[in-house]
Length: 198
Length: 198
Image (cartoon, rainbow over all chains, first blue to last red; front, top):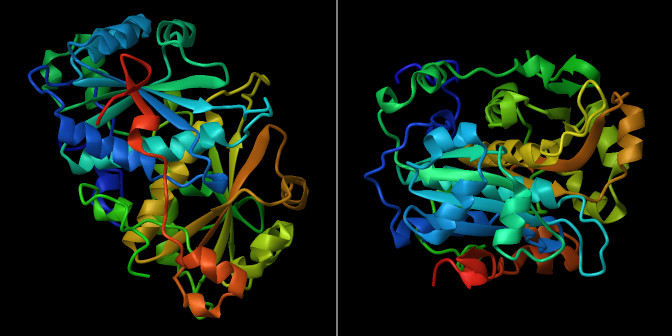
């Protein structure tokens, strides 16, 4: 596990440099009330336009009915590993207001909120793996989600486990170095395509 | 400035507990290359579905043409204060793929990326204030943004200044305590509306 962050330069705060999304979770770990409260608090304090706070969360802890319901809605590839997480949390956003008008920034703001949750989890020695691969229809129906809310993400939260315990196909992905596009391809100045930094 | 985070419980990492969005920026501060590189790196390392990395950034530093162009596209209420920021950065996302199919998670993932940028800025002693109030048409045209990208946010990045220097109407907002909905209204378990934590 020593090289997963080797491509990250040292100018990053450790919470960011060390953040990554494992698939190997420790099935012996349980998420206690204090830790759950802490990560949800981090999500709660995200900024949003006119302080609208469009984010909502459905929280299942391993062993409870919500966890099972969320797990059952995952795509089979995610079910291979996510059952060992200590919690499965659905991230939803109100994408229309009370009058039915679209809230264009709601998914963006849910992202701000989940990033804060994720970094707080890392501060507690936990990890978060986000999954877009799930049936949102299954989740919306199962939890009586009101009209106007959409499910965007499921978060597997837990303590990292031994990657040797993963199925072989997942183990290789787990140990591969993280990669991203170089900065000159994503940050511009002056005109589109002109790198902002060298 | 002592009470702006008083409602935030102490279980949060200081980077999250102390994060807030000032309007008073220090016009004497300049964002150097190293700091700019650092905050963009933080954005770059966010997670995204199938590692698609849909986020893009247009970076203006006070005094350059990009800063002026972004400033000119801001709504008047934001122009009252944002000109003192050291940088104005537009956050964009690719909302369709190469075949024109919608990328539903792109705005969400831009949010993940901007949250990381914001927390890295705070780790450097800087602040970030996000603005949805701008003319995206003005920005898209001015910077020749390719079809398929949308501008979601403008970030004012800089060193916090003296709120006494703000216009009076803004000063009151600057000094007001931060508020959020209580956790039982945003995090549920079992069924929608049932609080996940007390």
